[in-house]
Image 1 (cartoon, rainbow, N blue to C red):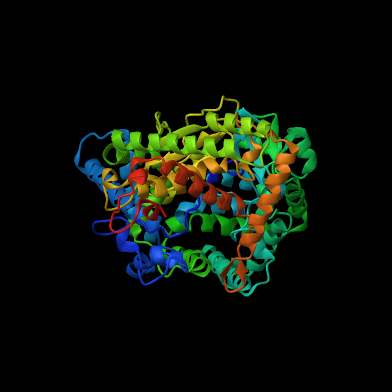
Image 2: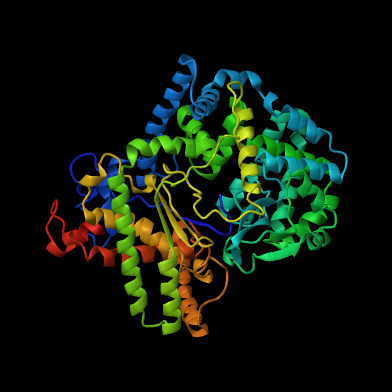
Length: 607
């Protein structure tokens, strides 16, 4: 997943778009509510009454319905692969990979018998740590198998030179969702942190070995030390502040206790420079390597090793991990069925292999053509809006239009699929297959260094209910899954719904990210540089501050407020998508004819 340089669509509201019969909109409306007083209840009330949140979820909306639809289809693909692998003398390599992975994911008897045996080698490495170089060697190894401890590392486009890939180092290594959990004093956060310190950490360490139980406090204190110099969510939205390019010599000088030449050699990384997101974090990491005892570091690694693999381990570990992260933090009452979790893991390991099979039957050429045209309509409406802005200078307007006209639109699925020939799986161990997949993806990512940027690559699979704008590529990417309305064929959905759903919440939303508080700082080539006139930038920031203030005043739960600065990009994109797609919809035949469907005008159906 991209960090710092990719913005993903956040869809957390329940959309009033699914009906079990007839009209896609009408069944969801609550006509006892007055739309002028409570529009959410009016538009969604019927749907929410029919759809209580299932126990295995902390939220429920159109995205969940799409996911259920996708899972059903992927389950058939995976079970067919298992059957073919058992009954046919010869099967295609990708089919065997699916069969091995899904088969081991569903073999709970083998997982129960194995206990922690699949992690035996890693636990022995941790037990054998005797000094700081040994500690760093294990931390480095864990990165290569998908356990990001102490910091985060990855290869992405250079934000100031989008034609090349660069190595990024950034803050990381925490067990709680973000740094604020370690310092906030509100009742909800305190309750979560108390559970983490006094129950979860000690229980997970006990599963490794009862003698490690008392190490929980040391693990928490180590993470809090990392959090002390981790930046807040809102501060991570400043791309300039989080871009600090250094030579390897400068990096070694910043952290004299860490020999990065040794780290990079161990990871087969060949580079003469690195982009450091938060230098003060790495200064802190350098400090605590010696101020925090090795015994605490070893327990920290044990916890993150077992926590990072908890989904794939025996039930006692898995249940405790879910109790804390699923129930205490997210409010979920029970886990998903095993087959759905297996598909989630399979998606992460080899999602594009599944995607190739998924799109054959679920995203025909006519559907792809419809949404390509929809993109064109939305982009045309956005161009008109830019031209008509009364606060932006002509110079910045021309630059904006140049950027808009340069955006790449990727719809449905990639033209070229990734090569999974180096991904190995077996029919014996889920954890081994997870480690193999993590190694594959780590090496795939690292192999991009010193190579030209592949601008055709997708960072989401076709069956994903999501979308994103990537400022370094200046592209919007919209997988087939984001256009699905379960229970309805695409050709049976009227334009009012499609423009309100796909055009507004996806296409318009994502392209607006290219001009939000963060995306607007990248030019038409995807490079981080200021192309705004000073006065225009000032006006933009003044208007953005009003939006920040508006959202800061919204109360989510109890005394918890929205963080308007941290969510600014999504809030701008939501509004932008809504008004741009509306402009586009007003040019359609359906809008102009104004015919009622199920008692609603085209404009009412759009909203």
